[in-house]
Length: 182
Image (cartoon, rainbow, N blue to C red):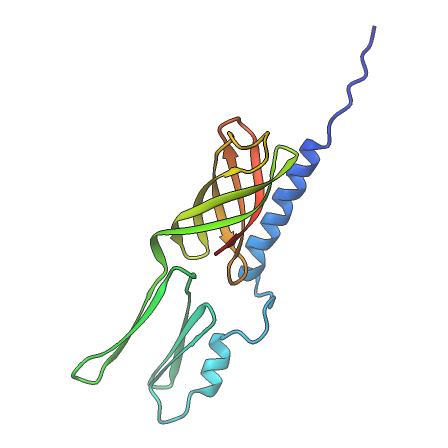
């Protein structure tokens, strides 16, 4: 006797989640302007006056440095995560140095929602390491079913205090979610 096998939408949900996460990760690198009003290298180059050799603009989560060397103008854009810092120092010789700390260890608690293999649950977590837009998070679900199901995940920072994450739980579920830091 033949059996009819009905595939659950779980694989479709995971695939759709991975597809959305992939698009969110790749859009900033494709030159897509998601957020208007952010500092760009070209905008700082255009505002560089002829008598200026170097200009640094820090706006929102970006530090843009433009340097003039003869007739050549070079720019450098660095992402500053919420946990990161920008330090500007001026030496006695008059040289100004801009240092951006965009990697390190932190304790950034957060909350949000996640799909544990097709089951949606609220979560609490914390980000304990960051490298640019990426972070390592650990957390657990808040529902009765997912409370004893801690997970580890890689998060991608998309807005001021919002990240999407993809990870794996100890019950061997793929975890896909959205977290907000506080």
